[in-house]
Length: 77
Image 1 (cartoon, rainbow, N blue to C red):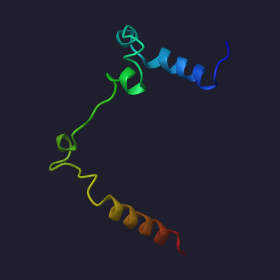
Image 2 (cartoon, one colour):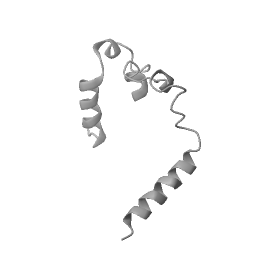
Image 3 (tube, rainbow, N blue to C red):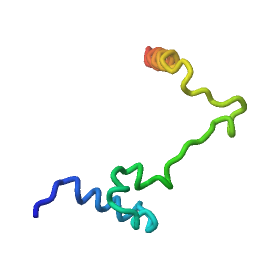
C-alpha cells in the first residue's frame, strides 16, 4: 500500500503531540487536529494582562496602514 508525502508527517505529529488520553478516543472523534489537540488549544482574555483589554481587533486595518507607513518612512534616506 502506498503512502502520501503528508502521512509520515501526520504520523510523527500524532506521536509527538497527541496525549495518551486522546489516543484512546475513536478515530471518528479525532477527525481534525483541533479535536486531537483540544487540551492544548485555548483562549486567553487580554484583560487579565492589560487593564481594559488589548483591543487587538479594533481598527486593525488602520493600525496596519500606520505600521506600513512608519516602516516605509524609516527606509527613506
